[in-house]
Length: 586
Image (tube, rainbow, N blue to C red; front, side, top):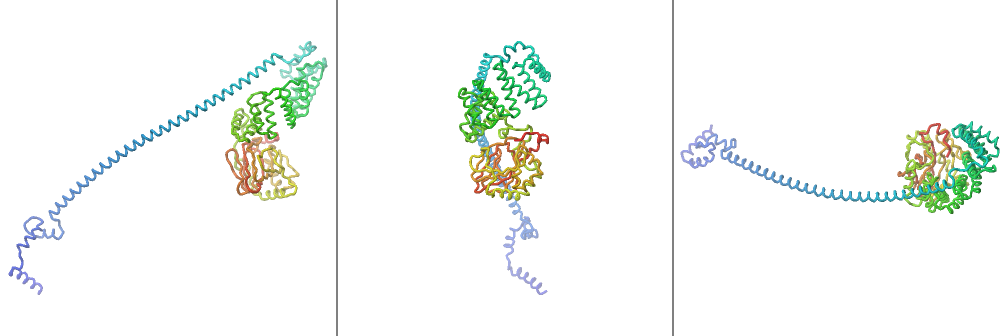
């Protein structure tokens, strides 16, 4: 109450004594007349206290918002213009870049096309040149053959097999001969036997009997009958009044059939007799050279071919065989021109895979990549399965790949046995190596460029080397139950030790009928590797590598110590049991 009374009296005092200038205050408060009614009331107070906004403030805010919106719109417009300008500039730049790139690509493409055109033109010119050379050589060969044929036909169209007396019994001889040519060999033999009994001094009747017996031997698959024919050929050639043509025909047939039976020395004697009788006949001398080669007498064969080339320097048959002999003597560079010229001659008897094989091998050893041109030609001629796979004793249709996995072969059990027992196999091999008299024999196939390479064989061509197996009984015992290895007549089972600094030339095995397993026994950490085709690998101790050695392969031993492996050849898994039993050994 006291405070209330004080408040009342204070208000009275303010008004009574005129302590406040109300006009001035109200004038100042008019600034806060928010609603424009001429006084300062509650509504105006709300504005003052911030609970409501002043009209001016609202207008200012509205104007501010409009300004901001306008500025924002202007900014957006300017940004849009800028972006549009940038896009346009970018598109223009991109277009120019693409045009520039297009022009550059077009230039590059034109250059590439020009180079390709030049390359193709060079190839075309080279091909045309090669084809022209081949056509010229073929023409020369054909002309040569025609000249020979003309010469032969001019000299004699048919061999003169009948002597003067035999012309009087020609009808009887022709009747018997007709039976033989019709395949009635039994009747032909009886007919000629009758003629021989009637005319025992007739060389032609005796020759006819030999031919009929030869045909019967082929029909019966009888070596005894063939031996009888060989004897009859000899009788016919030794009868008096035999014409030279009959003697030549008879002895050539005899030598051919002797070679068929494997009587190589007998065939050689027959051919030597022929050459003595007909010393000017180059073809007979060529055959004699082959006969010397078949018994391993390269020295005599070389002498024969030197004689032939002295009188017939362009004889292709003599050239390829002479080149073959030079290469076997390791006269690599000297052998190449003879092998090459002989093959290019196209003479009968020259289109043989062995000559393509040895020419390519000689060129490789001389570092000449044209080797693969000859391998390709050999492949095109049907001698090689491919440029890489150049074996000559093959079975058609077998799966061909350079590297195999154990699963590919189907010989998983054999591989596991080798890998589980590798230390036993290694220790027995080391015991053989440690003997004072080494049982390892140097490699004898002339495959090394340099170095030392020794082998210790346990099985060869499916036959067990008993003495060798007694030195390594555990190893041989492990293999006894795997006929795919021990019965492989076209392979070997052997230890192979290679000393540091050894290089084995690129080469191929003789047949596609086998696969070759290599079990690592003592393998240096670095420096030892094997390449098969264009894939190079390394051995590991206790692990088996499997490859088809009918493909080209090469070996390097550049380590600091020896490398020891165990080689196991196995039949190709796709060979039938019958094929495994009947294929000839290699």
